[in-house]
View 1 (cartoon, rainbow, N blue to C red):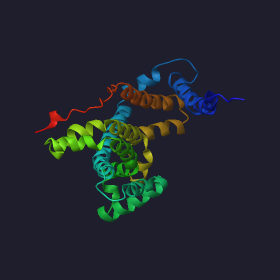
View 2 (tube, one colour; view 1 turned 30 degrees about the horizontal axis):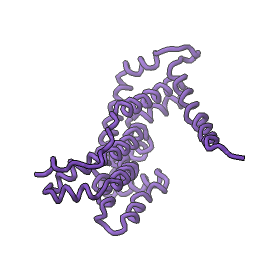
View 3 (cartoon, one colour; view 1 turned 60 degrees about the horizontal axis):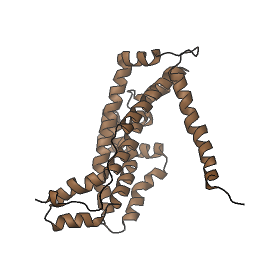
View 4 (cartoon, rainbow, N blue to C red; view 1 turned 60 degrees about the vertical axis):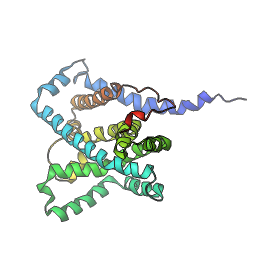
Length: 264
């Protein structure tokens, strides 16, 4: 008796329906309804017309942008060095970089707080800076891994051919390596940006009393205001979906990569 391969996808499809699709449907249902279950856009209008909630959104964007930028600046050179074989045993070093992900984030952030307290004297004096540092420390592995995987798949002969033709190392980096590793960069940015807007645990541990989007969602749900809490969640989901789908798919790279244009 043959067992069709399609049936193997049934458990996965059921899992997606129960734990991905159904929760999203519930979120959007509450976001577009009021307390009585009637369809309304008042939840969204009140969010965008309220200066406090818009200030929270702006503050969250600033923290997320700075965290993502700092993570990218630290992650790309690290991933580049590991993937290009500039060090011995790169896989072991990669495991060392990823090891903090195996430890509870609260424990890692508490340890970081103690280190910052020893350096700064009183960590409460620099809540914004410490929040960015804490989130960067927490999300850095999520930026390193996709960039490392993307760079490690690039054909080394492309870089060697460019150098043989007289291209400088900087030209090779900016005109070959970075463009070809862009899928990993985009993936890392996506994995860091949205969590940085919602992870209010870092704020609490770093003595930052300001709200971000995650704090706002938590305050609504703690007050049993399901509709506004779901509305803020829907705003974040729609924002990240918009960023994802507006990214134009790149054409497949040709087998022969032209490097003559980067010489000089």
